[in-house]
Structures are given as structure tokens and as C-alpha cells.
Image 1 (cartoon, rainbow, N blue to C red):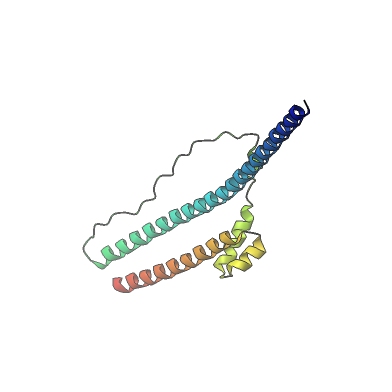
Image 2: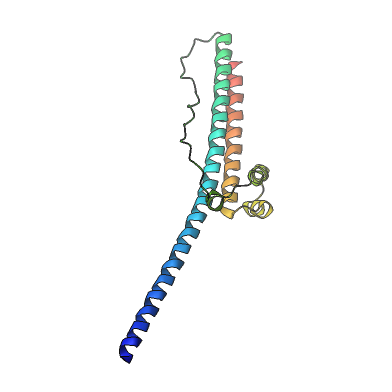
Length: 170
């Protein structure tokens, strides 16, 4: 009888331990999901900023192409048929109904921190200093710094190309 009671107690302890382990694993999965949702929200915000910047760049290129075309026709050159640069239509997104857990899963991202961080990156600060000043993760600060340097290179190339086009039109 004593052996039966001991084995039942051991079985109950094993089941209790297994239940505790399962609860701890579920808790870690929810933490992981929350972390992934927060970081994914930041990635999508960066993508949205890049999309808006790309749209502005395409509009500027279209205006520059129209100005260059009008300069060529005014100079008496033959008309060149060019494909116009157009901005793609915005993608329609399905609305997602908010749930009671939205504030836990994806807290609002401080857009002022991103704006000030992108301004600091445009000024040429190092990613570590951007991360320290704005409180951004180091990876996001490196991304902002590399985007700022790419914008600078693109603007310099555009200025050089427009200078050459203006010199060619004269």
C-alpha cells in the first residue's frame, strides 16, 4: 500500500512539473510573439518611409525629365519618345479589426524619435551616436545612417546629371 501511495505521489509531482514547464513555454512564446510584432512594426514603418521617399523621387525625376524634354525641343532638337515615369497606384490594404491585445502586442512607435534619428543620420552622425541619442536599437540606427548616405550619393549623382544635361542643352 505504501508503494502505491509513493508512486501516485511521484506521478502527481511529474504531472505538476510537466504542467509548469508547459506554462513557462507558453509564456516564452507570447513574449517572443510580442517582440517579433514590435520589430515587424518598425520594419513596416521604415518600408512606408522608403515608399514615400521613392514616390517623391519618381515625381522629381518626372519633373526633371519634362524640363529636359522641353529644353531639347526649345533648342530645336528632334523629339525623342520617352516612357514617362509614373508613380504606381497605392496598394489597397485590408483593414484589420483591432483586438483587446493590440496595446500589448504592438505599442505605438515614437515617430519623433525616427524623425530626429533620420535628421541626425542626414547630418552624418555615426550610428552608435544616433542610437545613444534617440534610443533606437543599433540595427535601426545603422539602417538610417546607410539610407542617409545612399540619399546623399543619389542627390549628388542627380545634380551631376542635371548639370551635364544643362551643359548639353546649351
